[in-house]
Length: 179
Image (cartoon, rainbow, N blue to C red; front, side, top):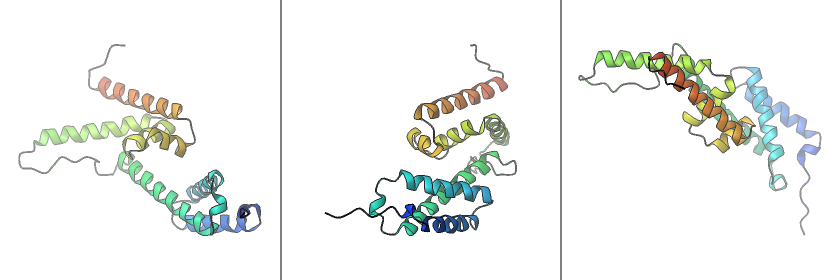
């Protein structure tokens, strides 16, 4: 019978992995706090990983987790900037056609700007849940895992965010719904 490998994080080298991963992420992120958050997420995922004994090269494993989380971070940043940045190009562009009505284009631009404002009014957690669900296409279970909250709470965040957006968009267009 093969003995399980000892947990590499039960020993001193764990601290070296932490510093190496933090340094790796600091070089690739916008700020040190994002790097520290992602580093913490790396070790949180490690602690939740069930097959630690089967990992032959824990350092390489942790760096792969860090790269995956960094990729997720960049995707989230890209979506956030596209939706919330005032100087960003619209996320949805009308197809270029000589038949395109300039008035329709202006209305589309106004709706997109209004949507940015309405999304900015949401709490950060609700906005994150909605954006992960609608813009990144994650399931509620994936969002729950990523945000560290229950699936029920994810459902509540998304429902409340959608309701807020509907009320604000309908209400500002003069089509307020009776309660």
